[in-house]
Length: 255
Image (cartoon, rainbow, N blue to C red):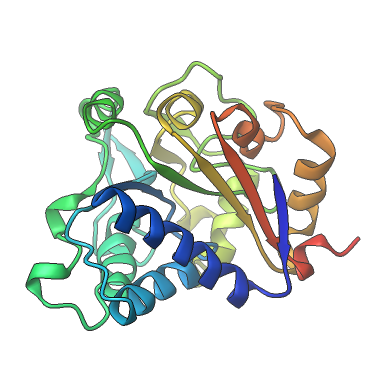
């Protein structure tokens, strides 16, 4: 299902309400979350509206999608969580902070409920998600130029679970726009720890792909014209999910 909102603010507010209504109904919720710009406004409204509507986030579990990795002496290790581009940093300094707007200890998102894969055992993340009952809503974003989703690019395989991958040049260039403190491409890590395409479509009950702004016009057209999964545009994995929605604003849909 495609739905277009007049602007990204209206989209974010309605998406936040959709998530909160699901949480209120089920009493708990497992939410898949990307880092970066695409869902930041949604995170803001999740915090603000949950406060105004008196909906507790203490039973919310956040499944983060990825983190940057560096290779040192033949071994992979996560980047410093204090790095400006760290997804771990983003999860606590941006997502947790926004969601816990005016919250007290009893109704806030708990630090222990923000989950990341283990670099020493990536595939265990899929087992962990499965034990939680799967991801109720998986929020997805698409790379502007290559359609990457999390760190899955066109070299990814459909059957991959959570894994370490080499980032494509296009993905790294897109990441420079996301994290403005990057000055040169060589500063962007070449590897990432990421949920796989298999993780996304097999373990999500519903996926919602969000495309907003002029920058996502190419991504919107690709998704709109494909209408089915194509590995050359990994974000099209949304079409293989059990249930899916594609939300955009008018700027992204301008042809």
